[in-house]
Length: 237
Image (tube, rainbow, N blue to C red; front, side, top):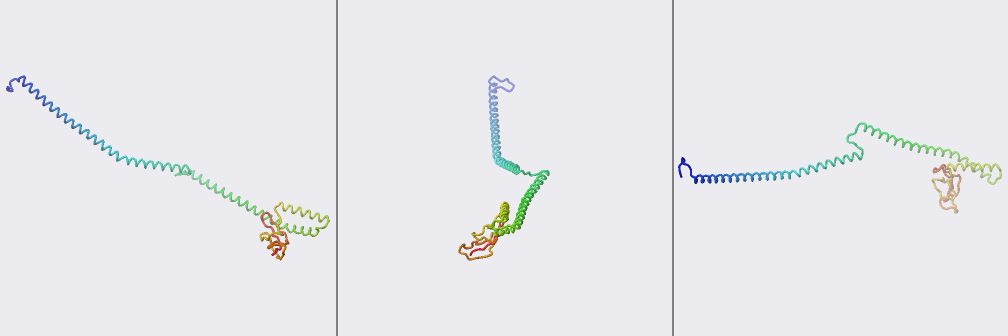
């Protein structure tokens, strides 16, 4: 081997080139190993990051699900409330005009109900007044009927034309009273009833059963469902 000033031989140059190539190959191998380690670290970091994000997402899902459930319940409550409003025709906040209309409608309905009650009450009172008035008139006519019957009883077997005329008038009068709803109360031979009969005498009579009407002293009359005059009777014990 020569000095530094001497030119290098072919062998020395080849030797140095091989050495330099080895050094370069060695450096390249170190760089590759370093790059490989760096890539592995990057991949690992990305994997760890993704795993962390997945865990965070998993932790957030129940919260989001719970929030979704609360939102769904809230929406359902709102829909239910809206359905009630639609069903019952109510508003949470009413307009003054609507409130005034409802108030007037309520007053009108009350007035109509009161008027209907007044009309029914008035009709009932009128009917009662008519019944009372008719009963009073019939009570005054009945003594005339009694006198007709007494007079006809006195001339029962007479052929006098006057008596025949009285009988015709009597029949006409009784027909008119019957058309108005006046009818005599059945008494003789029936059971005594204090609602229709007035017992003025008691008698022992084997021909009649217990508490039976044996004789009628004065006819009783009814006007529709009202007793105008009770029958005066004799009752068998």
